[in-house]
Length: 131
Image (cartoon, rainbow, N blue to C red):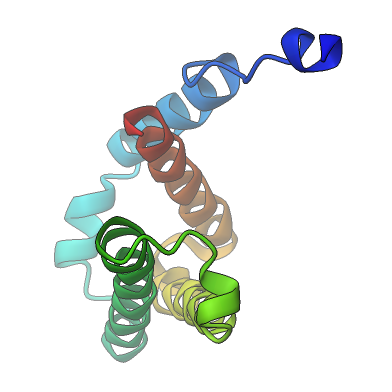
């Protein structure tokens, strides 16, 4: 009982989340991220499009879990009801990450994984502040 009182959840806004959000914003600005994504001819468009499709699958699966299963059906433990959801979502996201790295490698070379990981962490930390 005393242990539960002493263990407080971490605040949503902390140095860790602030670091990733600021790093993501900085990288977006200094690499002209969205301009490059939109206009650079060096991007391998086939791999980029595959990455978009796989990322969409991953996000749709997440929305299915959060909005439909949890909010409408009241199912909090998705793994027991739908055991394939977590592996499918994870595989789709990993494949999307690999596709984006292949597609954008001609633009940023070995910085590509660092840039994409920083953008990913910035988005995740920003979303964690919202909910």
